[in-house]
Length: 116
Length: 112
Image (tube, rainbow over all chains, first blue to last red; front, side):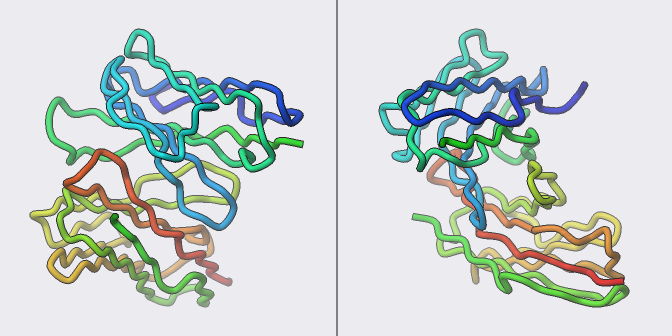
């Protein structure tokens, strides 16, 4: 599989529970991004990793959200004490290129989270 | 803060028509602009990437142009087909950060 994989595809959870999503990027891509998309909106940036270093975080990423990329390969996004407003599609993307930003992004199929 | 706007929000055309989708952005200091396609409930598929030094890119029936100084891009789809029905998203990477800034998309319906 040469694409970006996300797991699970769907998650339904009760308010207040913790959830964790996983993203496996394209193996040779050193840059990994998390985005969140709600219905009728474009994706919103959450956080960015270059290798294992988390280089940028959006103000959207409250203290209930944490992301890791421990070995510079797969990444996890955890949401603690979920709220109904967290219901969204969580998208992971990766990008290659040893320098510069002029390499296209490859997105996964997303994890759809529903908080009830 | 970079703002990306896409017009129209929705478009319905009969099969075979040529069509243009518009994207504008407020900060012309960009590295690149990318067009994506998104099918309902799915992730994004990259269509075209235009570097800031380029004026256009073509792939099959798709042609994207970039006018960085005026903050505009267009996506031209020739001879539209029902399979082109999807939401088309425009996104820019600004000089000020690593993130893609997306518009809300144009929802396209091509009717047989």
